[in-house]
Amino acid sequence: MTEENKTQVGGIDSNQLNSYFDRIERIEEEMKEMRADVREIYAEAKGNGFDPKVMRQVMRLRKMNPADRAETEFLLESYKAALGMD
Image (tube, rainbow, N blue to C red; front, side, top):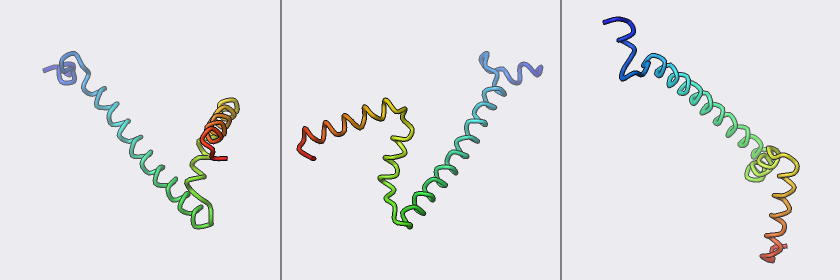
């Protein structure tokens, strides 16, 4: 068997495909560790009197561009008013 035959399965380069999966798995593991770090930060904030649930809401708003954030806040206020929550 030649080297080409060893890595080709049904026309697929198995070494290259395996490399992609290895990289994805490594990054997913790093992301898992980072999510644990974020949870620790929220726990620390909670221990200092901050509300993690509200902090998460603010984080979502901070990620939005100003126009989208303004629209979301307007709709939220409109919906609350329509439901008599003001």
